[in-house]
Length: 162
Ligand SMILES: Nc1nc2[nH]cnc2c(=O)[nH]1
Image (cartoon, rainbow, N blue to C red; front, side, top):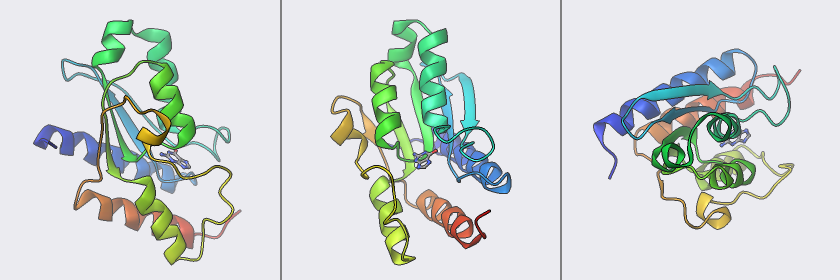
């Protein structure tokens, strides 16, 4: 079940995704929340402004592995504007983090790309979180919020590539 609190965290992820887009990066944002509800860390995609593997979900998993106890990681939840890619699902699982809640799914992203005649050059296959990491509790997409993510991607794809 998606609670009002879950929606608030996802809305913040979408704000971060929008900041990424404005900075010339891909529109993805994520938030790491402790078991007690405290927001521990947030980040956004920085694949153009920093380095090519800088997905927020990977950055949060690496931060959690370095800074949190095993028990705290197990209780933590990662919210994200778009479902984790295979790289980030693997990092999340290896870090022993808990639930993932995403606003839009990888399947949706792939469909939106195809509708625009894009996506054929993706470097990795589009897999769901559970295809990569079967034991992670993953929830999404969330109706209403997925449309907000779609409009960010449409804007990103309309921008001229530098
Ligand atoms: N989930 C996710 N998928 C991506 N695909 C390209 N970049 C990203 C990212 O930062 N997050």
